[in-house]
Amino acid sequence: MNNSINDFMSRDHDRLELIFKKYEKLRQNKSSSATKSFSQFKRGLEQHIVWEEEILFPLFEDKTGIKQDGPIQVMCQEHKDIKNYLAKIINKIEKEDFKTEELENQLIAILSDHNHKEEMILYPWIDESVNEEEREQSLAKIKKLS
Image (cartoon, rainbow, N blue to C red; front, side, top):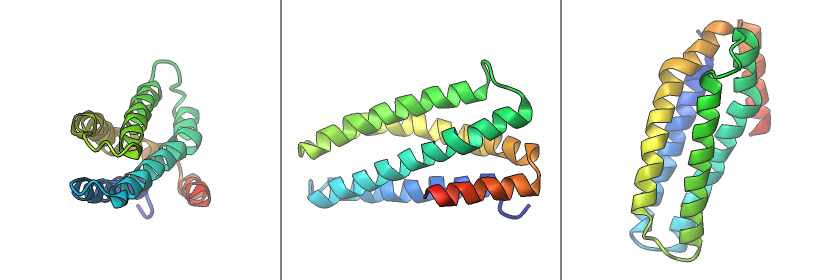
């Protein structure tokens, strides 16, 4: 399948992971570069969440009819938790408090499990639920929001 939602979104997970790893290295120096790097990660992850919540999740619910108590509610709750950790970390590092390892570990634990569920279950399910035209339209909307 060309241009699958799973491939596109999984590549973005990988891109975000690289930005986070860069931040982890820079954090050791407690520099403004670390703050900029984490801010870039935060913006990228928040944008990724917007793509899901505004484009992919409504598409999933529309195509599958699964709305109440379905996987999207779980994903959205995890998004709230992820955003909470992002806010806590950025608040600390903007005050030049780089002792964020515990928060980072909690964020990465949620994010790793979350991304795994998306890449192994949700994104493939969306790809299987839509036709090629719907997939292309969704990816075009995502790229337009970027």
